Image (cartoon, rainbow, N blue to C red; front, side):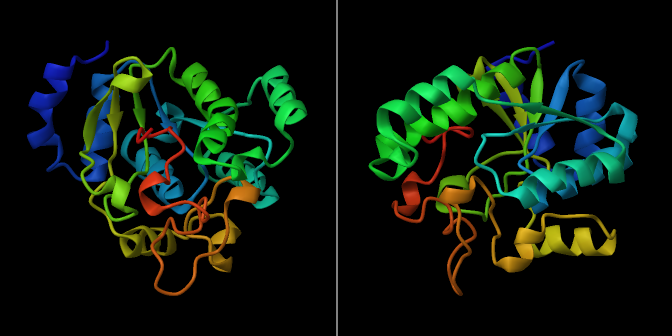
Length: 239
């Protein structure tokens, strides 16, 4: 059963104090249909491990979006997650006819022409598949952290996702730092995307992601030709 905006607003003070394990136990008890959204980055690996530990891998559902432009290392990480954790991972793809129409009209790299063109590509390759993934759910779980970027500093551990039809959106590691994530991964010897070892703290589509330079923030390598305050694809708002 979905929560209302009033319900979620009332829950924020309490749930913002929950640790990740406690929050996963609450999510499992509260929602009949929920899933972790994973791009197979470090935060998501930590999330899947935390959930599997808290409620058992048989109770954990994960979905990922294959945009058709992912790094091969990311695709391999999907299989590594399935094999290591024993969790179900459902893959959603963009509609082929929409991708074909975009590419035939504007070319393979239209997303570099303008923010509007980039958001059109993200809409076809990410947002439409996301809506199909979220359609039957009461809640979804993300690996968003407050210190990732200027667009994410105010996120709560529970939010009302109006953009996706009024779902509850849970962010169990919102208060973690990058060091917290990597300490957890290394302490538990978890598999992770090898692109992280090549300077990619944030990993998206191959032509839209580069390694970051020393001193840059974690998402500086995403759509690096744009201004920092525009660097969201729409999955988490900021349109």
